[in-house]
Image (cartoon, rainbow, N blue to C red):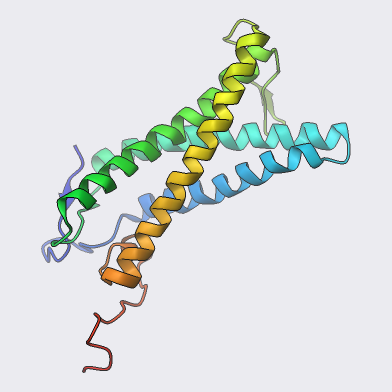
Amino acid sequence: MSRRITYGDASLTPPRVYSSVMRSIHWITLSMLVSVYTLAWSIDGAGSHDEAMWLVMMHRSLGLSVMLLTLFRLGCRRVTRVPALPDGIPEPQRLAAKAVTIALYLLLFLQPLLGLIASQMHGDRINVFDTFVLPSFMATNRALSRKIFALHGTVALLLLALIGMHACAALYHHLVRRDEVLSGMLPGLPKLPLPGKEGIG
């Protein structure tokens, strides 16, 4: 189980910040997701067949990388200190935060897996970063493949919505509650003064 700590626990250093590994994985995952979505939205507008195939290859390669990185992230989370939410957070918000976190991990793994399964059932060769081709483990079934691709697209929108909720929650903690949740992933982020205390001290 993750060894959770509370904000303000002076016995651990630093008590309010995720480990450098977890922070790196978080931001690398985000940069990969930006690329994955950008590539997906660019395929239909490709100027040539070769360009479209390159975009598809990179989209699939980065998607698989996100899936593997998510597995590694889950492993790291089990052995790394994970800051707890600050005191004073209402229980419904705590439950919502936990639910969104679980859903994000699930979809970060499920979304690329659906794309992989649909592609192989379509009969496509999965060329990873133009270096090697994944062995096929799915029988060709194009009718089912189309349904899984449709689900892949729906899950992509759901994942995007969850990422937006996650980002809004982080900004809420920083700009409204003015606590240290966001600085857990951005060490050194200036802490805003509490409402009504601007200019004091």
